Every structure is written in C-alpha cells, then in structure tokens.
Image 1: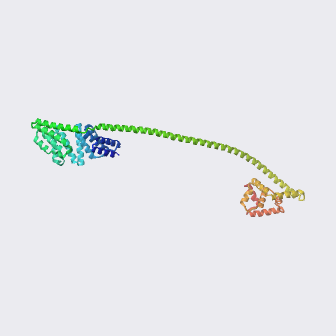
Image 2: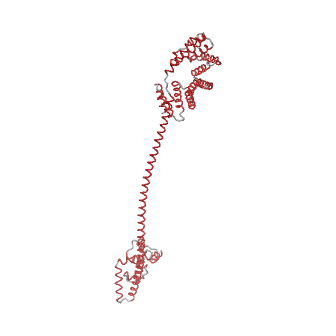
Image 3: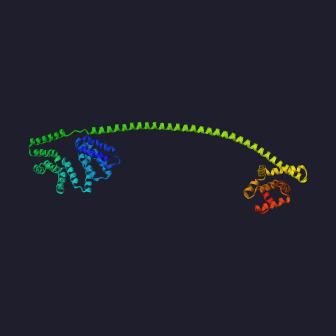
Length: 454
C-alpha cells in the first residue's frame, strides 16, 4: 500500500498535479512502518524535490533531503545516499556554509566507492562553483576546473565552462572568458536553458566592465533581472506547506473520527456484553430455580421413601414376630406329632393310635404342609434342604423328607411311622442307600450334622 501511494504521487507529479502529488506522498509516509527505511527514504526525497523545484522552500527542502539521507543510510542504499548528499550539497551552499566540507567529503567518498565518475565530476563542479564566489578561493576553484577538464572531459557540462568563464572574467581576462563562453551550448541541457542564459549574461556583464563598457554591462544585468522576474512570475506558486498542513489536519480529523468510532464500538460491545451477561444470568437463575424444584422434589421423594422405609421396617418387625410365632407353632406342632407317635407306638390297639395314624397320613399326603416344614427347617438349620436340593438335584421329595426329619431330631421309629415304613430298621437301610446315591464318603447323619454346623 505504501508503494502504491508513492507511485500514485509520482504519477501526479509527472502530470503536474503538485497538490495531489504531495497528498499521496504524505499518505504513503503515514502508511509506512517505522522501520520501512527504503520507502521512507524515497518518499522524503520526492517531497524534498517538490519543495526545491516547485515551491522553492530551501530550508524545508534541506531538512527533507537530510531525513531521506538518514533513512537510506539505515537501509544501506549507497546510490540514494549519494543522490541525497549531492542535493544537500547544493542546498547547503545556500543555507549552511559551515557544513560544506563535511558533505563534500562524504559525497566524494561514496562516489569513489560506487565508481560513479559522473557524480564525482558533478560534485567537483559544484565545489568549483562555490569556491569561485570568494576571492580567496578562486585559484583553487580554477585548478579544480582544469583538473575536471583534463580528466573527466566526457562528463563536462555547461556549468563548468561557465565557471571557467566567470573565473577568467574576474581575473580581467575577457578573451579567455569569451573562449569558454563560446563552448557553452544551451542545446546540451534544454531544461536549464534559461538558467544558463542568466549565467552567461552575468559573465558578459563582468567582461563588459573589464572592457570599460558599463552601459553594456548594465544591459546584461537588466536582461538577467528580467529573466529572473519572468521565472518568478511564471512559476506556479503551490503553497506546499498549506497542503502539508491540510493533510496533517485531515490525518488528525481521521484519528479523531477513528477514536469516535472506536468509542462507540466499545460502547456497543459493552452493551452487547451486558445483554449477553443478563441472558446468561437469567438462564442461570432459571436453571437454578429448576434445580431448586428438582431438589425439593428429591427431598419430598426422600421423605416419602423414609416414610415408606419406616413402614417397611415396621412390617419387617411384624414379619419377624410372625416368623417367630410360626416357628414356635411349627416346633410345638412337631413336638406334639412326636408325642402322638410315641403314644401310638406304646398303645397300638387304642383309638388314639388310629387317630394319630390318620393325622400322620394326612400330613404325609398334604404337600403344602411339607413345603412349610421345609421352609421352617431351612430357617432353623442353616438352609439344609435348599442347599442339599441344589447340590444333589437327583434327590426326590421322599429323600428330602428323610433328610428334613433326621435334621429336626426325629428318631428312626418316628420317621418309620411318618414315612410309612414297616419298622425302624428299614429307616437305617434307606439312609445307607441315600448316602450311596449322594456319593457321600461318610454316613448321612455325618453329612446332615456338617451342614447344620457350617
């Protein structure tokens, strides 16, 4: 972008639009970075040229050239450094005579480094022109001019010939002065034709004084004045300083405008942020409220569950009481059955015996009664029935009944009567067969005792 503005300014300068050129140069300078030394050097060089050739502001021109020289030194562009030094040397002869020697030495050193004989000759010619203006340095100026004439003849320009003519005219040698004036050719430098004519008139005026013709000298001086006046009248007086100030004013207004936009952007962003925060806070409060409701529901459910748990606990206690009562009933029932069997055994011909046999037979045939008995025996004797059934699925209900009656402490006689065997001896035989069926290493009683103890 910086180069684009620089090129646009150059195009405007070529087209003669000096105000537009200055505007684009200043825009390029404002757009350039602080370390964009090549572009900053080019920009300040072109601005200096505008001050020099169009407006004629020597002081500002010199400052711009010096700034451009500093940027080109930082960028390492020696060719542009030399160009800036040459321009500063020209301006220095008008503003800062005390810096001439330093500028001249730097420029000569760079010319030798770059092997630029044309610039070297140009610098020596400028120095010769400066030295020729003082009586004390005219001899040195003459030596320098002849050195250039003898060694750099291909770079000789009209200014060097005019310098020699001026020097000889000041030495009262009009013929030598006329010789060098005769070799001056305006066609060699058409852009400087008016300036060359003015310088020629200056030399001819001195020659006329040397020859004793003050009236003719006055005519040459008047002609030079008219030419200078015509140049001043015809030169376009572009007030570049006002253009630069206007640009700076525009830049200032632009900065203020950007700051205003930034200010409003910040306000808008803060407002948007406030709205977003408000929405987020609202959503958070709603969610928090919802969470409060959820927590409240959980608390209610927990209270209900605690209430249910309390009822369940009460029911468990009731069931425990009922279970205890059931166990007591079953235990007393078994004891009664045992006593009735004993009575039947010792009184085989009485009516009680017949009654007991019917009760036992009813108990034996009633599957529900034996199921309740199994639950009781499991609860009281370490789950012996369910564990045995799971371990030995080949056992039938009769086998499990035998194990249950043995575990509860029924004798062989009682077991024989309950299960309908002929005598007590048959119970022992059946127990042995059941032990073999279960593949036990010991007796059935040992198995039952180990299960109850474990």
